[in-house]
Amino acid sequence: MRQVPSATPGPIRQCAELARKDLRLELRAGEALLVTAPFGAVALLLVPLAIGSDAPLLRQVGPGLYWVVVLLFGVLVTLRQSAVEGPAQLAMLRLCGVHPAVRLAGRTLANAVLLVAFELLLTPVAIALYDPDLSGWPWLLPLFPLIAVGLAVLGTLASALAHGLAGRTTLGALLVVPLAAPLVLGATQTLAAARYARQPWAWLFLVLVIDLLIIVATALAARQLEESA
Amino acid sequence: MTRILFGRRLTVVGVVAMSAGLVAAMVAPPDRVQGDVQRLMYIHVPAAWLAYLSFAVTLGSSVGWLWRRTARYDRVAAASAEVGVFFTGLAIVLGSIWGKPTWGVWWTWDPRVVTTAVMFFVYLGYLALRRATVDSVARARRSAVFGVVAFVQVPIVHMSVVWWRALHQPPTVLKPGDPSIDHVMLATLLLNVLAFTLLYLLLLRARMRLAVVEEELERTSLGEGQELAGNAVLAPRLERS
Image (cartoon, rainbow over all chains, first blue to last red):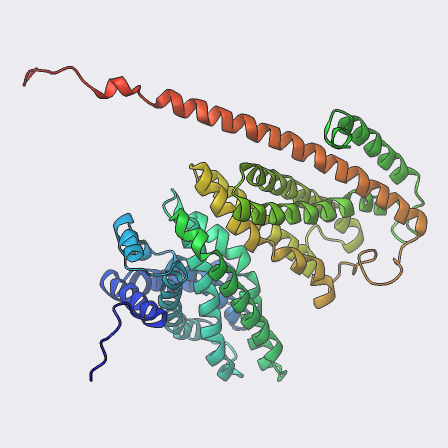
């Protein structure tokens, strides 16, 4: 006897579908990867013009500048216009029985995927422009997704808090950037520790703990944020 | 008791305590190394502690609003955050003035200094979020959520001198064991903490009263803009008239 499929998909499936919807929208709009990423690359290009083309200095400050650009422009990725749901879309999601936490998780997943892509696009640009010391590069493999997830959750939270407000992008950035300071610290110190042959586990652990704290806080606030949407 | 705490006597007690704190700060023995510059501690440290207290009150009131949905909690949270931003700014400015003769610079990339500046901007974001939201319930809800999240910065600021190597001195009073400070200086410091706490209560009360008036004004001005129900029905008109 064939089992009748459930009418409502489970939360993981819902989350994946919502993330897929966001990524499709981004594919059509190209806001994050075709506009914000080149903008970030331009920022990386402008810095040497401002501080001088001293190659040893640029080699030294390059990794830090890269992470600052990822933070500042990554916030713009999370606050992109194509990730804003109108009243009708929100009403439909509510009628479909999508839990607020699942909706935010879907948005976070899409943001995280886009931020990893954003980091990967900017990496060769930073390497080409600053010629940084690449010893300890394997530590970037866990670092990229951890930083992307942290920024993605903070961006989702700020986007929900500033939903429908005038100046949403600037206000959202003001809410995210100071709170994301430990992420930048963790990212830069992980690479610095690896470069000086020290174990960077403590810094990776810091980033992981911050990610988990923000995830728990956002999940707990999901219903409240849904009410203000 | 409530009348003593929140009535007119609070102003009198506050002024007396502030004056006593100021006199005590002037007559306390100077630091052996820093001399009279160290007297800035009697304002800088209470301002920093009161900033922590203000943000803790914002946290508690934000949780209270999310739980009870009472407007009073929102007013307390907002007023306390504003006062907290003032005290944080005061602590940063005084720290900078103190830093110039002792460290030789107005600003240094010390973990305590940087994390305090970050905390200042986090709560400026909180105030900006409140200002940007017009609807009072949405404003209370959003700022309550952010008020809870933002508090994570406070323990980071306090522990920064323990977690990282810092120029800023580690905790001397809020630490396990006997405070590592001269007892006369400690008494003067605690007197100033008391005086600043009373100042905090005064500012909090004044800001909350102002918030009540603002809400009243908001209600009145909203009412003025609305048309009377009878105006919705228009007299019939001929076409092209």
